[in-house]
Image 1: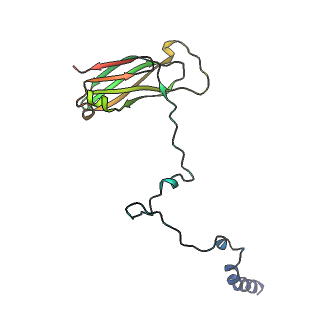
Image 2 (image 1 turned 90 degrees about the vertical axis):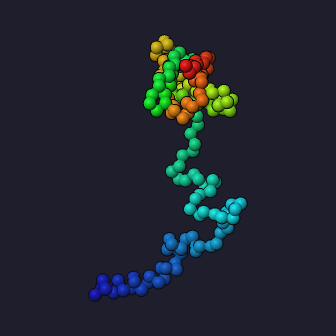
Image 3 (image 1 turned 135 degrees about the vertical axis):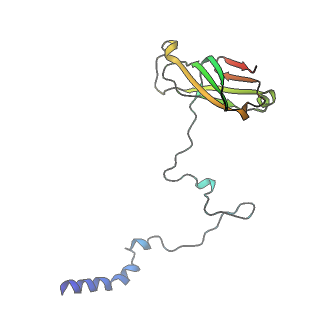
Length: 171
């Protein structure tokens, strides 16, 4: 009988709890109308975030490019494939520990007009100091695949480093 009495009093007090300031659902109040950002055409898609709101709780900022051109390119070769070509490059870094090597394409109107496909051989060095070491321990290899569509109209392929560049002409 005691449990029944306590249960009925607790359920009867629920109406007071609904309007109480102790109830967490009442902490922020009710919804209010807010202005909507409208683009120049007068339409807005509420499902797409604006540029200002694109970073969320778990989003990371855009990564900073820490790569630099490798010291020098020592070898380069182009091998033809069924779908295009593979450009291989070998370079010597300034010091040991170079990683994340990449052949990054240099796009410009002048290169396109002259039929040049140009790449910069870039590498990332560790933040801590590393020894210079001998040339064999600083040698880094990388390759990039190029499609037939990209090779249309290309007469020269160039790989550039900090101190030199190597070129391969089409036969």
